[in-house]
Length: 485
Image (tube, rainbow, N blue to C red; front, side, top):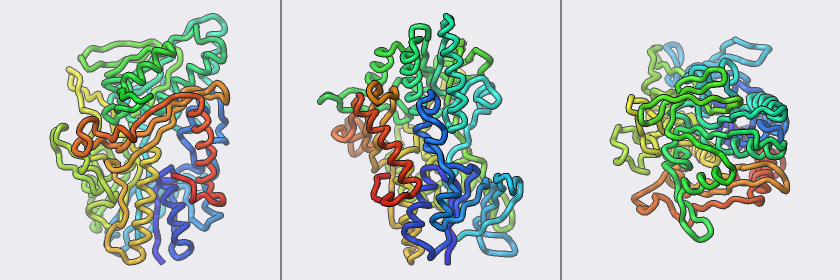
């Protein structure tokens, strides 16, 4: 019997666990390690953050699900990897520290035959002084708990406006190298929608603050979409949404620090500015969770396995080259680490080989450009491919058997622009491929017939149905595997 250890139980880690359990049954041991007791459908946190959903509607207990199917669940965080074992044993192992209250702080070495790093990101609020809900002055929707606090403060702000005071709402990114603009994009429109429902929209100034060079970049270098039979770009699409709703925007910006009621930021031209606010939700920068790696002798080999940002190197081409010389072929296909055939990294945990959006620096040398997104459908697709490869390698295959390059896969995104069964709307977009391939599609880098966008009430219904479908699937209820990932 072999042992597969999965670090992380988000979309990608849980997907690996689900499929391996389905295909392997009790032939092999599957262990999932996560510091969180609950699974969170993160895309719906934006609805928790405006009071349209409760925390229990976007989370469930992981132990209950894993116990039911015979997967061993450890509520713990991974600290380090010893892929060669140690002097006394050749068995590779990962060191974890328990976060479960009954064993909090206790450490244990877990041996493995295959290891999947699906740890996701560290929410690096500390990269921007004064950012975040715990030790700063802004709120977040990155976790369900954060979203609850965000809604509490939003409702307080609404009460303030009802009392007759005008308020400024600032939503966007809190660092020059942020990714996940999509979550902020959805949240700003849901806040706008809630303010209109509350009858106080005329008392609010809403500002979008982002590190994007142009609106609609989303870390993908922008996108051209087919809409109504015409080709338009993401910039025009995003600008039209903001103009229609009276949202202002500040782009090409890096937030340098946040004080109570005041955001300090630098722009690409090297100038520094301030923006006052009464309520602000800014997405933090992402980093690796801080895993260390050691060889058999106990020497630190972290830099060999991980990129400087803490994300794990996989089968990508990390050769430094000018931005204009990168290729879609640089992106990983199997997500196997180059040094250890039994280690994989999926989702946000793998290190992208380069930026998709053009790297830029301010006149002062500050990087201001979005990092590549690696969430949602791509996360699930690469996780399923890795699960299939591990299954086949356990069956005798010498190398990974399945691929899921982001330069060869499409993705669909349903972005809420206001919740409400009859009054809600959502922007529905598809992109193919996620990473543009200008050799195959020289005009736009993507297949324009498979890259399109629409907005309307039907999109809201679709997002609401998908919310329930993915929760059902994640709970591994009857027929879960026939649902799309």
